[in-house]
Amino acid sequence: MKPTRYLNNLDSFIAACIGFYVIYLYTKYSGVGLSPDSIMYASTATNIQAHASLLTFNKTPLVFFPVFYPFFLGIIQFFSGTDPIKAGAMIDAFLFAAVIFTSGWIMSKFVAHSRIYKWIILIAIILSPGLLEIYTYLWSETLFIPEILFFIIAYWRYMQTHTTKALVLVAIIAAISCITRYAGVTIIGAGCLMLLLDNQLPVRKKLGHLVLFGMLSLSLLIGNLILNSHSTGLSTGTREPSITPFADNLYYFGTVICDWGSLSKQAYPFSGLITSIILVTLIAILVWKTYKGRINSYENIVIAFAIVYGLFIVISASISRYERINSRLLAPMFIPLLIACTSWVPDVLILVKSKAKYALAGLTIILMLTFEYFTYQTDWQRYDDENDYGVPGYSDDDWNKSEFVVYLKQHKKVFKPGVPIFTDANEAVYLFTGMSSELIPHKFFKADVQKFYANKSFYLVWFDNLYNAELVSLPDIMKNKKLVKIGSAKEGEIYYCDGK
Image (cartoon, rainbow, N blue to C red; front, side, top):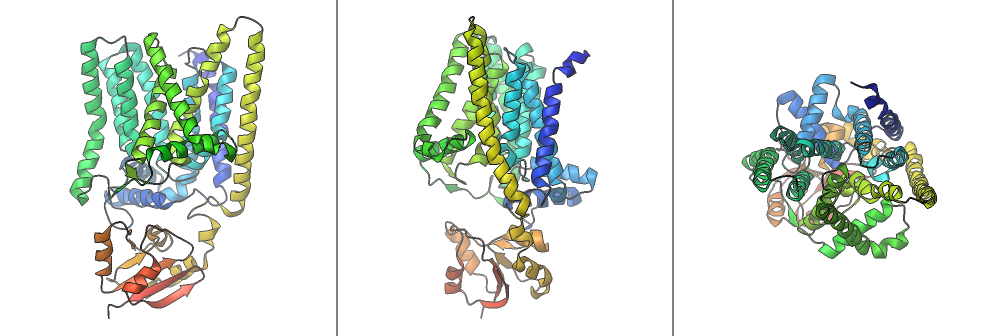
């Protein structure tokens, strides 16, 4: 093995080490950030490791999320003996470093390889507020993003040989990504799109590879959905229809792009247009490259994924109801979109034969460094805030220093065995007390609401500092049930309904 192969990516390794240290800085005060999803992942990982069970903290099967990320955490817990929540910061730091190094490796294979361009993009990745948010939380996106990059590398290798063996490797990565996040179907979509556009494949071989790739890449997802359906009767959990139309989702998509680009909120009115221009331009570039017979390159795989993922998020958000399009949902697209929107610059500069190319190159570098400076200011403000109270979520000081949380820990004996416990934050109850509880039902699901009110006796743990308009409210519960307050502290109360 030639040493130059490693020296060519020494800069990527240095950037990866910097990224690792950045995640350490953000999480050193309170540890990894914890959201309700994080508790779901961590508790399932613990059950996988201890009991080979896919049950979550509330003793129900994991169906709303795929199984691989908790399985990944469970493997780490098995070998390290450390709870995923305690190990989360180090896990994220290593994964972020892997993302940075792999991104550098991919850029070193570009048609027009420029080390200056590579470093500018690596710095943009390290400073990305969207990625720094992802990699300071215990979220499945932390694993999904490197899987996207591994797919890009594997697919490029397949394009060099078009062998079945290389295609099977691509399909395995795609299959694993689908059981890491359901959005992994976008990797399958990108792979199928590239296969269709590949003008080096004979039609018969292309059809055979499409069928093989589709079957293998969907296999684990289908198995996961069958398991979910067998366990609960629901393949992906309870889903509500979308309440945001397509045009609104284009707008929300664009606001994220504005934030990523360090643009002011004055650009928000043009967000829908910005989204449309980006997606249409990327599609046009891919069509042009196909027409010119230059589809087989790293750059085009990246563009294909950016197109498929962007369209998937906008369309799916218009069909199924989940959190409004935000930086977290779009974060897996950040690196492909960044590369897709900038990788053409070195190509263009090479075509310029006059000395003007040096002026253009200098202007481009100044623009990128200006963008990164404003991004750095955003990162610094977040670091300054979180160094005082921690990463927002269940690990920050609002929860760690909550008087009601302390009260719950000290008064667990007030809950009689066998009596169900309901709450507006069942993840918090589990995290801080180790007790299982049920979430107050969503207003939208009338059958669940009636089932809740059919309980004759139960405990209700209510956190005042939370507000979820989709859940049945405390005043509504009090109208239908006689609640007796049996304990309270600042920011929360415990009620008991005896059914009389």
